[in-house]
Each structure stands twice: as structure tokens, then as C-alpha cells.
Length: 320
Image 1 (tube, rainbow, N blue to C red):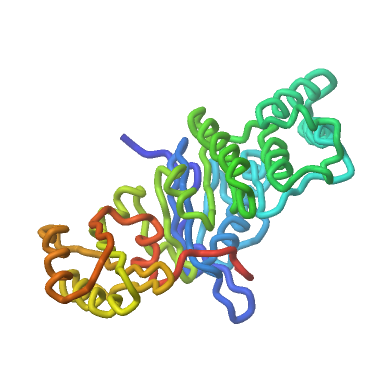
Image 2 (image 1 turned 45 degrees about the vertical axis):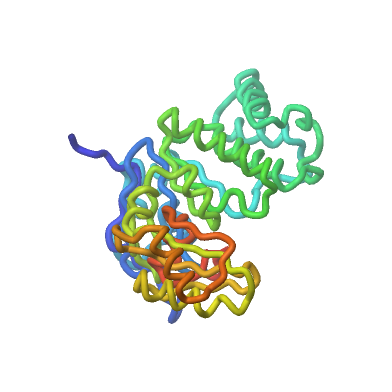
């Protein structure tokens, strides 16, 4: 079988002055899948989205979206995609209904067709009750849902979501997640950049970890987790037990432990498949490290990210 890629880039490069935002980025997103793009601040995630959506020209390399070259066939790319940025782009003075009907008319819907399409999306995103209020009165979550509804008016085959749930409350975030799952289930290809590792874990078929403008690691969430082993974590009874517990985990796992004095936890990646929880507990007891809890479990995506990039969980990007 030959995989058809909705998004394919090879060696993408982009520089802003002395800052290399992209240093040869390779991406391959299969049709009908959700690809989560993760990376620390300034890794190049947003720059990649801007290049792939034709908002910024690359300095080198190549990219195709929906089969079209992003430089030579920019108009065709734009006709095939939907894009939501890190802030809603709707008109705050218009009502939700007016916003969607305006976008629908710009997309060549006419009369009853524009009204029907707008009303259907207002229902889908639970905005019908606020449809005739100015968008400036909407909460952040409502504005992001309206923004997503607007970019889906044309039913694009490829959707770019650049940190779509940043700053949203859990309920609004879950609504966006539900919409993404529904779109993917209908065959839409989604490229999602996010600062929430749980979001990528929940939604993505594949994940690309971008670091310093390159794709450093890629795989399914399960593959990335399995690739670094299990995670040993203990909760100590008092701060004085942190040091001996760390020494035990250092010796048993061969990895530098991470200490959290506030939570009184010590954790380390354990790549030895023969290491067992009873062995850890016995070693802690022998070292006199008083603990109240101990676990040996699959790593979270947060721990995978930290292990593979050597950096903390990503926040919002700055310049890149």
C-alpha cells in the first residue's frame, strides 16, 4: 500500500535575521489522520504552520499540502485548507450568526444556503443560544468555537490548528477536542500544534517533537512512551528522605532522577525491563528512605517530552 500524504515537507528552512526558526524540517502527515506537533518555546512550530499555510515563504526546502506546492501553487493550497491561529479572528462587533453568514457568502454560499450552513455550525458548536449576541460578548471558549466553525464552512480537507485551546477552561477544551475527533472521523486531515501534552495524547494518531527547527522524534503516543521505558516514582514521607531516595533511583535506573521538593517526589526513567517495584521498595527500605507511595508505570507524554528533548513541558511560543 502507498501512503498518501496530505502534508509533506522536506528540509524546510526559515530564518529571521540571525534566528534560525526552521533548520530543515521534515514532516509527513497521512491523509485522514491527526498529527500533533509539540516543541519547546521557539522550536519553530508556529513558523512551520505559517509556511505550510502560505502565510510565510520558506528560505529553502519544499512542502506540499493537499498535493500542491506551498510556493508555486499557493492559491490552490489556500483553497484546500482551514486555519485557526492562536487567537480568534472573528469580528467582535458582528453577532455569531452574522460572522458565519459573512464567511459563508465570501465562500460563494448564497441566500438560503449561507443561512443554513451558518445555522448548522452554530448548532454543532453549541452557539445557537448566543447566535444573535455580538461576538465581543462571548467568552474565550465561545470565540474559539466560533472561529473553528468559521474555518469549517468550506469543509476543508486539511485543517491546521495552532494551539486552538490555549487559555480555555476544561469544558471548552473538551468541546474543541470533540470537534477534532469528529472531523478526523470524517476523513479530515488535522495538523495540531499544542502546548498541552494531554491534548496530543488524546487526539493525535502521530506526534512529531520539534526541537530547534527540526523534527527530533516522531511516532505514535504509544511508540514514544514505549521507547523510553517505564517511569519509577516515589513519594517520600519527609524532605530529608529526598536525597537517599534519589540515590536509590539513580543506582537502579541509571538515569538522573527528577526531584520535586514541593510534592516530595523523586522520579526517573527505568529502561531495564527486569526492574520490579518490589526491588525498588526493598532498596529504598535498605537505604532508610521513608516513603509513602511508590510506582513503576508507563511514562506520561510529559515525561517523554522531557526525556527526549531535555527541556520542560512546552509553553506558548515566543518569536517562532
